[in-house]
Length: 535
Image 1: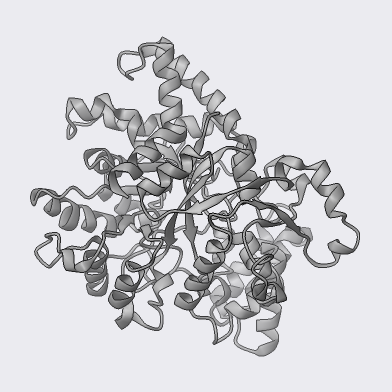
Image 2: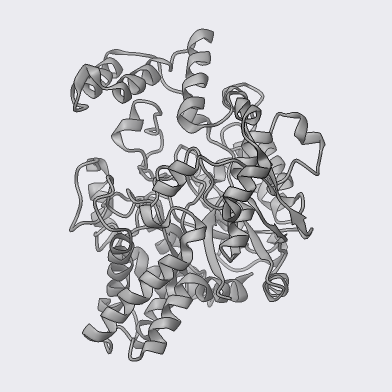
C-alpha cells in the first residue's frame, strides 16, 4: 500500500477549536483529534474553501494512507480579530469594495466585508459584532473568537494546550467518534452519517507523535500514522507580550518529550523578530491590518532567536549546551529576512562545516529569479498581477530560494492553495496548476549556475507535499483533501511521463520506472528521507 507524506498541515485543529472551552476538555476520551467534526460534504466534494469541512483529520489521514504527517501547532494570531479605528481611509476602502464588487450595492459579500470592516472599533458592541462576524466567516464557535479577543488569551499557554490536545490518544488504537456542532446534532444521526460517508467518518487506527526518526520508522513499519511536531509562527512563544522570554522558551520547547522538528519563523502578523511576507488579498486587508512589520528585516531579538533555535553560538558554531537543533521554515518570512538568513547564517555556518537545510514548507513559485527582484516588487504586490503565470508575492519562493534549498539538501513543500499557485477562481486545471509551479522550480535547479552536476542530477529530491490543509485555504479543486492524494499521484505520473518523452535526459527521467519513482519520492520518500537525516 502506498503511503503519503505532508510536511505542513493541521490535522487536529478543527476538533481542537470546536471542543476547546467545552465540557469535553475534562473528558480525555472525547477531547482528542479522533473525535472528528462533521464536515459540510457538499463543500468538501466541490473542493471549496475549507471553512466548513475537514481536509486532514485523523480519519481522513488513516483512510487516505497519509502516514507521515508534520503536524503544525498554531495559536491563532490576535491580528485577525483586531482592526484599527474607523477613519476616512477605511471608509474609502469600504466604499471602494462596494463600488467595485461587480453588483455594487446589491452584492451581499461586499456588504458582509463592509460590516466586518466597521466592526473594528473599540466599543463592546463592536467587539461582539466582530466576534459574531468572524464566527460566521470562519465556521468557528463564537466562544473561541471571544476568547481570542479577550485579555486572557496568551499565545504560549494556548500552544501548550494545543500540543496536549494532540498528545491525547497518541499511540492508542482508537475508533473515531463524530462531533456534530450546534443544533445540527438534533437532526443528524451519527450512525447514518458514518455509514453514508465512511471514508471521512469511519476509521479505527493509531497515530503516534514521534520523538525521533527511529520512532517514525517503527510507526511507519506498523502502518500507523507517524506525526512530527512543528510550530507555525514564532508569535506562539508569546513575542507580543513576553519578548524578553523568547530565548528561555526556546530552551523549554527543546526539552519537550516530543520535540519540535521545525518552526515556521513568521506568519501573518508582526512577531517583533523578523519581517513577515504580505499574505492577505485585498478583500481581507479591510478586515485585518498586517502592515506593522510587513516585508521587514530581521530584528536583534530575531537574530538571537535564530541562533538559539539552531543551537549556534555568536560565532555561528554549534554549541551543545544550546540543546537539540530546531530547524527553521522560511514560509511566510519576508524576502528581506530570508536574504539575511541565507547570507548571515546559512552561508557562514556552511563555511564552518555545518550545513543547515533550508525549508520552505508550503509554497508556490513566484516567477522571480532573485531575492532582490522579490524585495523590489514587495511594495507593489496586488491581487491582479501575475508574473509569467505565477503568483509573484514574496510569500512564495523565488529562484534564489530554490537554489538555497537544493544547495543545502533542504526541502520544499508544494502548497495546494490555488491562490498561492497562481489561480484564484478555479480557472486552471488542478494538476496543471501544481505541475506548473513544481516544474518551474525544478527548471530553476537545472538552469542554475550556482549548483553542481550532482545536485542537478537529484533535482526532484528537494520537493514534497506541503498542502496547508486545515489552514482555511481555498484548495485546488481536484485535490481538496488527503483522500485524493492517490488521484494526485496518478496525475503527477502522467505529467512526468510526458516530460520523459519530451526531454527525459534533461530531467533525469529515462525510464517509466524512474517516472514512478520520482512521483513516489515527491509524495512520500523525500520527506521520509529528510526526517531520517535530520530528526
